[in-house]
Length: 565
Image 1 (cartoon, rainbow, N blue to C red):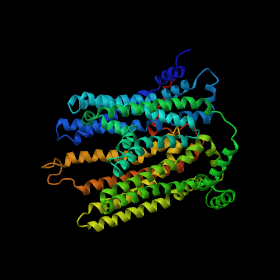
Image 2: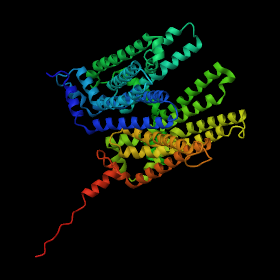
Image 3: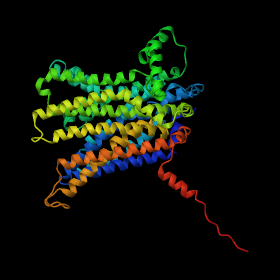
Image 4: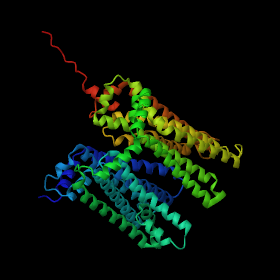
């Protein structure tokens, strides 16, 4: 029998997929574009500074990609097989748990590793320029590879325990967040409370964090203590094999459907009553919402959803209370206000992006959306019901976040008047406006992506890229070009004028609003026009305009000459 037969098969299949090669090329092109803009932003400095900025800029982006690659690649690989009922067929053969785990790992992550390998030559450019040493380069490359394996192993371990797609992805995300954020924050709190007595405990909490290994891989920290770096890399690598071993032990038994025990049924019923309410509460809630909109009841019948958003806001409030108790009056300044507002805005935007298309994507994959479309409900009422469910979940938290940011604005104006420092009030008002515009655009684009995406896993990522990441990338590019073309003495294009904060804030605000408006109107128009057609095309996503253009050109009939006798 072939050693690791599934791995052998999946590698052969991956070698024939076009996305394996195009993904690698696109990631390399993305790294080259980032390097170009870093060069334009640092063209007045020396090659040493430029090489260091390029290396560390690409490095931090690459570590983010590696850290959360498990959420995108492996978090749903086994749970999807469970939902489709095909995982048990693998264990009818002589395959063992480690065969299935390593095979799924190879099948889902080979494209991601190819993309990571494509970044390494761009990372080596600063090495040629002399900005970093060979030892530093190879240590950081080792950390990237170790972090990617750790993330993929954590994702496949959570997938072995889960059955539902959303729970699997959320579990993988929070597990990785535990090592990437919770442990370093806990170490920082311990050091701030008792820096001299509990430093060893803080050091143990930092060892499994990829950020700690990345920082310790630089030349200066590495020379100060080599064992910190190697212990951190070793602990992360050990956790990788631990997750793989646990997944291999769990997966042969997790696919089986067993009858629930009495205590399990009791806890399941208690959880259901907590999430949806008891029978009387469900009936009252269902009657009230069905009179308003049936889709609103279908998408928002879990009363736990709004409570989760309020719980997250409460956690931020607890952190703020702790900061006030520790720092006193020094806590109240713009250095705390702005990061808090960014955290709240980002949390709401990402949450709305994940919820906007979830119901449509799940129903479209299961075929339930076809039944919904078969009812007398019009498309306008279906879309309105989804928006009402989102409003029920997020309107209250949104108003609370806006109120908090207005309080921050008032505190900022109390410290300095508008005439003394006009930048801060303008930023606050622009940020609040962009928060509302982004949430509206995310809700519409999320619904549209749910109707057109090939897999439900891609809906949130595509929505975030279109509304949140792409405008920022375009803004950074335009800001760098504007600084190059308009700055100088004299300016190359407009002598006597240089861009100030009004220009850059205005560029960000106008670009964001135009992007949100275009995407919102486009998604709303497409949804109203082709919702019913897409609902019956579960496995045939809508082609892109470019694909439709080439298809029309290929299908255009050719004129043939007719011979006249």
